[in-house]
Length: 516
Image (cartoon, rainbow, N blue to C red; front, side):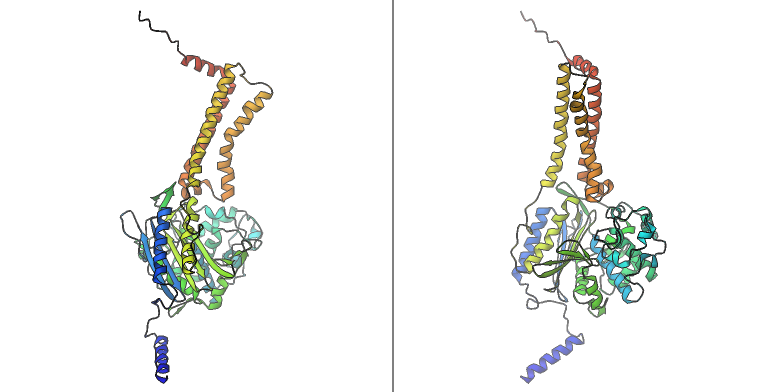
């Protein structure tokens, strides 16, 4: 018995002084047996095939250990394979890095969470200087500053790589109207985190990119991560793809430096497991302490209510499901998608990186991380985590083109019939029902496409063209058909003589051939 105690005492001492490694997990360290790894592997490959995902990287951590790490599929048109070290653009999961940077500076005494933005950026303002002066750092972190979603999506096409790009983007907000008073309610806006990135830059005395590199990437040993495409650490970044209807096609998207803090950090699955470990272990990775446990808890604390079951914290969404907490965030840029998920009660963290993006496929690309979580929790996969391919949105888009064509054909033959009956030009009440109402229907798709849809999705048509080129082509075609036929209707209805002349010119007299 004494020998056993001595052995464990010696083992504990060796671990504490770092002579024995503790970062490699065994099957006994975590309830992830080989059958589960096989299930994960089969599941991911099945989802990639179903959703036409070119390449994917997956990492799973438990406590301070990496228990699953693998790349799948293609990282580029040259056929190179995705590996755990392959860099991907993160999208909005970048926001949690910016929040971490802010909290580091809070703990260093350089930022006050409840100080107004103007404390650090004295020139900052929106269209209402008094209202924007009420926005605090905490409001930005919790996404309840009042800045609108729409404004935060206007920079995706900007390819400015100058050192002033971030500041110029924030100065553009001087004409933006707040959608609500600061602190009133949640509204997701990229500009909240772009402003935070500029505050980090102003307070730290270095560029945002340099701060993230030295204060977060370096201590986390994230050697395949960067805050700029030009960084040699990410020279082998995966090729990004963009969906066109059902198919992913390579797309060299703009990389807007003005939006780096909100959505354009770059990392690999392996590096992101280091980040997950720090988030799960009170800000600690190995011997490096990035943030205090209290600081990490603050980042993961609900700050603004999203729904009855979820809230937004500081770079994270927090949900309560069946008595268990879920902390997560996804990211979507034009040609990449990412997901991070914590199950703190089970000490599990998961990262999924995908090299394809698409407005109509965002929810599809969100699914794999949910299925992996269910497998880890020993649950059966359901229709929500392993659905068949859903082609309904694309079919609806294509079908939308046939409806106006049928309408145009029917309208044309109606006008011809009225002409044949001598009912043109229209007079009295007939003009209302046969001309003005159909003309309004002709132009209805234009109003829906260019007014209602941008308002509904809080996105400009430029963003639609970038994120969903297939949808934009359908919209542009519908617009051309609608306006073209509206002009034709006006001409044919108000100038029926031209229609008669055209019809008579096209008519021919058929004379029987005498063969006698």
